[in-house]
Image (cartoon, rainbow, N blue to C red):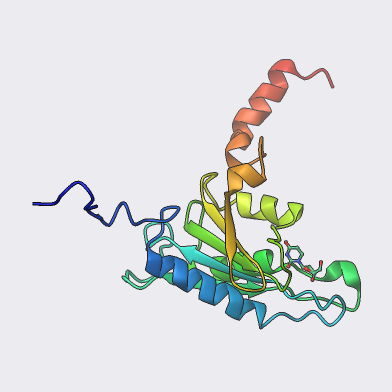
Length: 182
Ligand code: THU
């Protein structure tokens, strides 16, 4: 019989932002590993990203498995500076092509940099992630030491414009026909 000081830990209670300890460990490890793959000769600012994907329901091309599927990305810079791409968008593009990522298919995002603070995804990447993440999806932002802070996408991108904002094209045409003057 447990006494008053005994706590019973159920699997649900041990979840951290909806992730098991093992998933958090894997996300951290892969985020830091991805950071090591950055191509950033111009800024020297390495960014790694790891996407923890839900099992196959949202990702039809991902075989059912109990081990978490994690897709990595890193920033890829270019001599023509604006052409360079952020780690987050590299990871999402890779996940779409390699794992069949579709909307709602991401369970968590990890990012990692070399700074002491906790760098968050840039505005363009927040919007890019918005296409595929639910607003409550956690984003683990790692600093140089592998410590992290967590925010949901909805916290990082309030009042956002997403795929659900757009009415179907036919409906939009009808609405334009009704109300449009020009
Ligand atoms: N960078 C990312 O990869 N992700 C972000 O969200 C912010 C910035 C990269 C772009 C560039 O290669 C370097 O960091 C410095 O801006």
